[in-house]
Amino acid sequence: MKFSVYIATSVDGFIAREDGSVDWLDSYGNHQAEMGENANMGFSKFMNSIDCLIMGRGCMEILSSFNLTPEQWPYGDTRIIVLSKTVKKPPENLIDKVEIYSGDVADLVVQLENEGFKHAYVDGGKTIQSFLNLKLINEMTLTQIPVLLGEGKPLFGKTNQEIRLEKSEATAFPNDFVQVHYKVSYL
Image 1 (tube, rainbow, N blue to C red):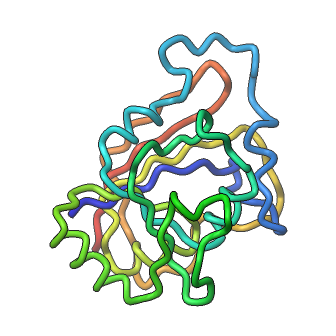
Image 2 (image 1 turned 90 degrees about the horizontal axis):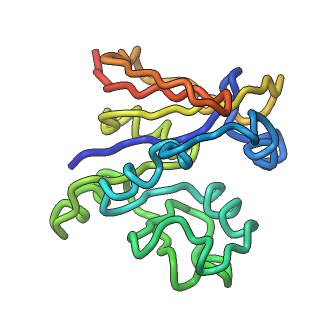
């Protein structure tokens, strides 16, 4: 099974403010830029390539706080699994959209493979970290938002070993965002 990361960070590597807010994601960059066919910077193409999404509890809570309408929901009918040892049921506005999983990640991978899933989107800092440490992430697409937050929740923390990122492909968008795609190689 293939596992991919697709996430935005500040240029200094934060995915959220210290309080978990991500209000800055839409605050920076050139909003008047003509994006043409790159309006969503490849997100739709990426979503069409995956068949499930695995995210952490914090990511789910942020998603819930957006109170998205059905028209705003970016994930379609994609199966969404939320990893949490503490939360047993999703927030009211996500009840029919996500499922909570509290077991071992390795067991979840086997379960998904047995159910025929082929490509998972992994989202959320701690979740990405755990998948990296289990040597499961195959590729990462990191979109840098043109801001230095100075502090916040970093995308990456301590890894069990060095991890090589290779075969990079970078795209600079007219809105001043820079996106880099990497293949992940475990040493």
